[in-house]
Image 1: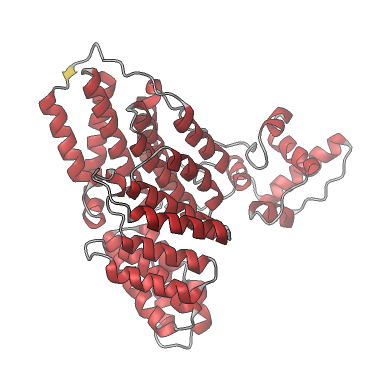
Image 2: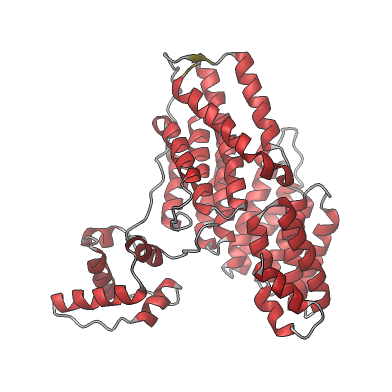
Amino acid sequence: MDEPIRHPLAYARFLRDWSQSDLVTRMHQAARRRGLRCGADKAAVSRWENDRKKPDVETQFLIADAFDVPVSDLERYPWPHWLPGREEPVPLGSAYTVHALRDAQRAVMDRERRTFLTYSALTLAGLASQWADLEPERLTTAAEGSTRVDEELMSWLEETGAKLSALPTEKRQHMNKLTEAHLDTVTDLLEGGRYNETTERRLHQLASSLASTCGWYRFDQGQHYAAGKLWTAALSNAHTARDRDQGAGVLADFAYQAIWLGKPESAVGPLSQALIHTRHPMARSLLHLRRARAHAAMGNAGACHDDLKAAEETLLTDTRDPAPSWCRWMSTADLAVDSGQCMLDLGQTEQARARIDEGLLLLPGSRDKTRGVFRTYEARSLLQAREVEQALVVSNESLNVARRIGAHRCVALVRDLAPAFRPYKLVDGVPEFLERLRSC
């Protein structure tokens, strides 16, 4: 899994191999050069990196001086987005689609690289704005290349891609290398094949779908940097193919990742952009539900309830049009359980338990990963109600599922329950469960 570097300042230190004390020393040196006083210490750096306090303007100048950041960057970007190490995504546009795919492949292969886990709220908002506002160029037919992509080959590529993307998580963990190889083949054809304009658009749509699927596998493994690169490639190719629904789905993926990593403020803007540009009721329901989760995590009860209401109304809207592939799994079970998670975040425990129980009863048996996540939410609600024995049963079941399907982020979700269990070490089974978590 990626190293949990969750703040740009910590990442900037990591890039230079500085401790917090090293940064403080350099800030004091910068202050002396400027004839200023500096009251920074390790405790102050820790508060900045945990978002408990924001450095004032004068202190930010000293931090910038320590990192050799020009003053113009401070004027251009707000704290902490001017810090060194921020990585901008590849711009959208047909000239960059293959570049974005190759960039994602490098991210997957670079096992040793440890980067800041996700794009910042500022960067993600900019990417969503590009997707919403930038007019895609017309596709241009490839005039040269060694392989001609005819109808037979294109149909085989699409059928194989659809089968790979539809695999349940338990099987996908064993087939991901094949999925990534299929994406590599499509990328090679985009870069060097011969095809007409219609086929080119289909190749971009397939590349987007495969990159999204591969991104979810990396996300499940806790490899958030690689997941983000793959989703950037997915968004770029969906944009070039002029597939607004697919692009909205990729923005929903980015938003889910941001919420999962405790950065819900990064999710609201992209989800709002996606809602403007997709029309299918099921897609809109999922987007409203994701935004409700973000609002709940931020403590915005009114906005959360508005989105939950909209999610329910749109899910019940009849339509003859098939839902986009990225949201066809959306159901009343998902609505119920995620509504319950919203209630938990807002401190409404009883309502949360009722909704989570309702969702678990409705969830199909085939969706093991989702059930494992939902059971963890149930365990959290049981712990809040001090029903420790039942929470222990549910948590063990969730951990069993997460380990069987190879979803490391789901294991981490169960592991996050450990602090809530520790006060109950005298309850039978709790010490053994805590020891099991330590060995995961």
